Image (tube, rainbow, N blue to C red; front, side, top):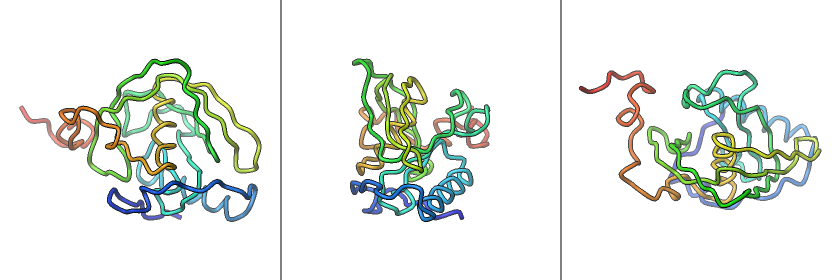
Length: 181
């Protein structure tokens, strides 16, 4: 079921989410299904449970196919992942800036610094451990989604507001609008 996505300004997006304590339940399975339905309907690269008003530490991201996300056509595909109670560990000091958007901040993009490489761990929906070491866009996506679990929206991480604006102005090729000459 496609659920409404909360937008910036909703106070629930600023709260810290609670740990998931029950794995393998029909309720968790339904929630994950609804999250995938919602993310796919919006062409999202990821979605955190708080974005649909559920304050649990659960994120999904990536896609099952090998095509890049239509909102990020220049980026490599990220494997479809369900991550419960995630923990992020940066690997090194190297940060990387990149453009981000968010389904809860529609129509805007900004340049955000993120750890270039990291290890993430957590659990799958059945409670089995998940651990991956990733870099680049994959690392950016997981950091963005996990920020939602702590009540952080990407504009809070933007350092240079000359590189923050409306997607259709910054990237007309993504909006289908004709480019201005």
